View 1 (tube, rainbow over the protein chains, first blue to last red):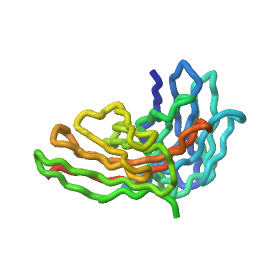
View 2 (view 1 turned 45 degrees about the horizontal axis):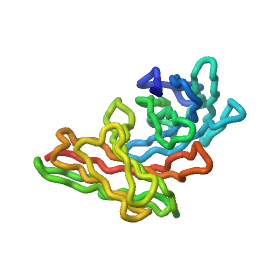
View 3 (view 1 turned 30 degrees about the vertical axis):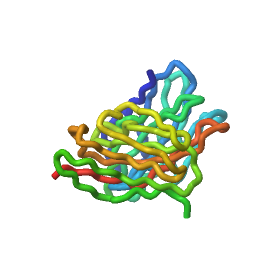
Length: 113
Length: 115
């Protein structure tokens, strides 16, 4: 079975500091990987996705993630945090050839001035 | 603008009562999904549908029912058999094949509480 582990339930950073949200997955078959962001009382918005090709994926709002197959990781990074980045972030796995998504438990990014 | 509309935003249920959550999309997507979100647990799949008049159980379907009579609509009924219905419910949709890895688009959710 596939699973996704987000190692940190909360990550506090100061404004303009770098951000790293960690994600590891387990799967015996090829997967697609996504990061979604959720603001309070709203739905989820796609930040970026890895399907194939370049392992460094750039997304919206200055975020990027690197797929490392040997480490089964897909960590999300941003060079400089903004106050508006405060939200919950979900790492998501999808099996190739199937639409079902498996969600991590989420990481809440806290940004302080 | 195309998108997914969920209504109502807040819903209260009395003991023993069935309630129905609405989900409408104008993205012309074939697939639609219902998720339940509880604090610290991420999203869990309740039901999904890849075509009109067909749907499949997800991981936590017990106590829920759905219908898919129209492509753009996928209502979820929370029945009295669901003993712990308090949660945030999210509807999503996506394109189905031939391109794999299509992301899902989400509505803004319905928060259901027990009176």
